[in-house]
Image 1 (tube, rainbow, N blue to C red):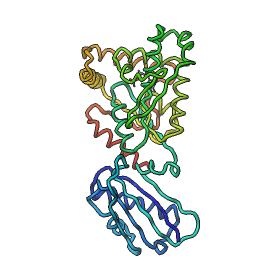
Image 2 (image 1 turned 30 degrees about the vertical axis):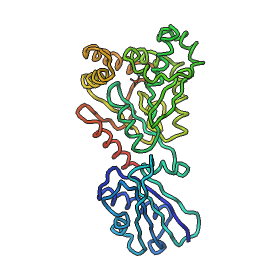
Image 3 (image 1 turned 90 degrees about the vertical axis):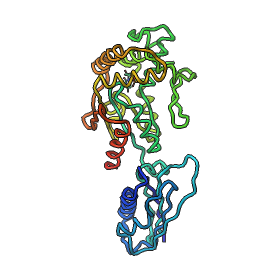
Image 4 (image 1 turned 120 degrees about the vertical axis):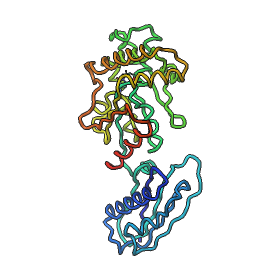
Length: 335
Ligand code: DC
């Protein structure tokens, strides 16, 4: 006999979701291990204490796993553990190597078993990319890489060195030695420029336009894209930017392109600025957003563009939660 392990997550503590997730997990284990029902001796489940709506064992029986012993138990509450998670162990009469199966957010539990995957989230300024990608990353327990922050750090470096972001020769002179790193603290990205945490400074309104200009330069893009690809090759992650689906990771498993009218995006940026204490009139923000769109879309290298295979979502009339749920549901369908 051998033991086969698996786990999955659900979005909500809801009976229907638990039933579907358990059914999917067991069917996948059965398929991948080429198991017939008479070979399954018993199935044992545990679930995190935030799932109270349904017994996974009952869900298994209802999914047709009736001829074996079934058992569910509750896990203790562990700080910072993956939430809404259902774990399973099957004891089966089978020889050979077991294939353990981890689905949805539970993929992160056994990254040694599961392939790394990337979600490309592109779109113009203010379309909601950063907010949405941070929440998705938390839900799926994957890394979130805000690639705009890297171009913003390059813009800051140009300002510090007194270099025009349009002077390619001079920018090329500093870009080789630029030291940009991203680290994570409590899941939040901290951006470092030459060893200093610049996460707050790069968000100042005056940086946006310079970042857009400097990001059009080949020397800058080559360096930043290398860094982004390296991070994506080491982690399952969601990257938000302008050219992730078209250029940085054209083979990303999931691609989304967020849009919203310029007016809605300007209002979002205005509200964000107010909350941070920056005082810039709405009309100016709107003007700048339109100009930046034009600049980002019309540059020669890797312009802002929807990848052909990306799913476009107009977020103008959607709440953040609605956008997040839509993306998660599309990802789960594709997984
Ligand atoms: O997303 P953001 O506003 O922080 O990005 C700032 C600028 O950086 C944006 O105007 C264009 C550039 N950028 C880019 O060219 N490619 C990316 N992947 C991300 C941002």
